[in-house]
Image 1 (cartoon, rainbow, N blue to C red):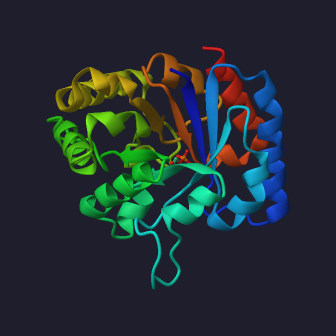
Image 2: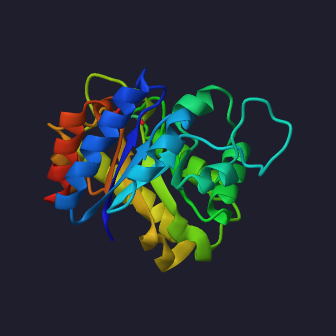
Image 3: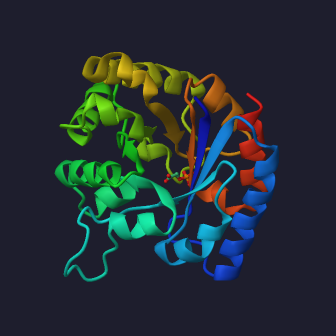
Length: 249
Ligand code: PGA
């Protein structure tokens, strides 16, 4: 299975010119990238003008989607509207959205809409703090079980699981590859208990202060299939370097 690098632009960049340049430099790099898929998740307004840039291993993703197809929901954008503009991945349940009030129930509903709409869901899970008793394992397991409730074995290959410990997002350092390795094995076990051999179709990503210095080791030693990147995905030089480093693994 190919590795995956996801750039979560959040509410950036400020201008369309910067967004176009950023996507352009990633697009140019893709001709030399063989084993890695890259997903750019810009704010909604940049999705339509960027839809011409996808292809050749580069995909467009959304940072959220309303699970309903249409209706009177001021300010919302539906998953089916996004699909028409070439969006093939949707981030669901990012901790910044959970903080705004998204429940496990809503996240489960969104995942179901995304996959029934023919797109892949990048499902974010992760604890806010680590305790000495390892209770965070149970927390992450519960988040996974609730997010994937009633999602069948048949659809599980449309799920990507992004483990993002909240304490490492936007922080000065990522988690250690060693701790990540432990967590990735745990997540794989949770998925196998739920889906048997089908669980192996799920790519596990890591997110939280990944950069060009730690990217290689996080993926290799952390035993994950790729990275979900915030800040560094806005620096074209660094982001392109991360893509190349991961592709070379
Ligand atoms: P960061 O963000 O790479 O800036 O830590 C990751 C994320 O929020 O997905």
